[in-house]
Length: 414
Image (cartoon, rainbow, N blue to C red; front, top):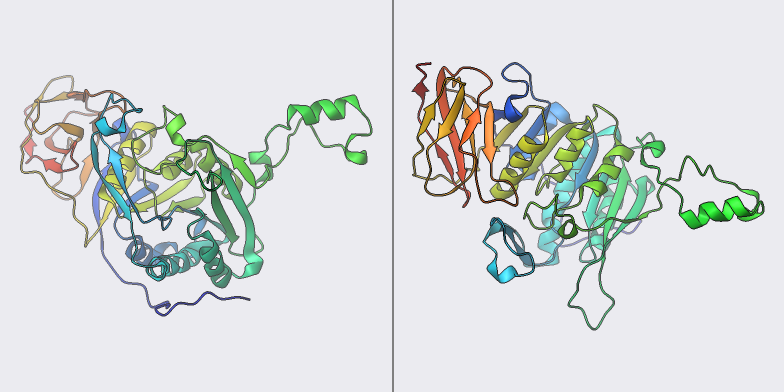
């Protein structure tokens, strides 16, 4: 079997790190304060985070979706403005997102190789890994996966097709991504019936009109078919209700098909390059337990807001010890009412998100109520109801620029 080599190639013992519990979030009070979270979001280098998770999760994860940098050698900013014209990018309000720049292809492979090896260790015996790439490095990565999993464990090369404008004039437009699929063993999860799609109407009409169609092989037209290994889903730029402003965001329908096919209800699934958080959001909706990680603070914040908005299940937010959240020196002030609810006084700088722990214990921030800027509106709600009467209030907020603000504690007089 061909093996890809480069001068610095190695698999050393993965680094160790500590994971600090930053908060437990109860989206809009759901499950507060007793329900334990089954979903976990991590800010940190996924190499260190996965290493730290081996003790608890090695051989336990049924599905890992990996959407790493593609070796594009580009910088990807995040759109943080609201109500902007999508056709006029020069007017957009932007913030740093993530950087996909490498000195050499060797440096990129040095980055990806040990992470793929850890993902294999975390997979359960029935587990499947989906690695999402494009033309820049998919050929090299397939050789790495053949080496780590064995070429016999290759399951599919899925081609995701999409439309969109392109500046290319001297080649065919590059309008597909490649998803490489490998299984941990022969006994892998694949739920064919969960992902069936209708037959093309022309096919249905052909079989209905002629008994000779299909040379005697008549499919179950009502049941539908398992999709081929080429999939068409529109890019998020065409899906206004899904857009977060985070670059390279993937459509929910694409991730839903992967999750339905290769995991089961209550399966533990993971995305260690989670970006905008589409995978953990869709997986949690489908009844899976999730692990999600990203090294970019902006990605983790976008994911947190999406989970708060789209779930009614608690989740834990962890931070790798070496990572810190940008802090603002500005202060917050608020007023309690008898509803009970809490009113935030107009803040400067402008806020993107804020949350309340109504019973701060001095150790773990338990977010029982949250407010955020809707994707297409500039207004942040300044009053939110609380799930219980507060006893010792603590507030956290994130500015539009991505800095965190936090109040001291206040004993409630209600």
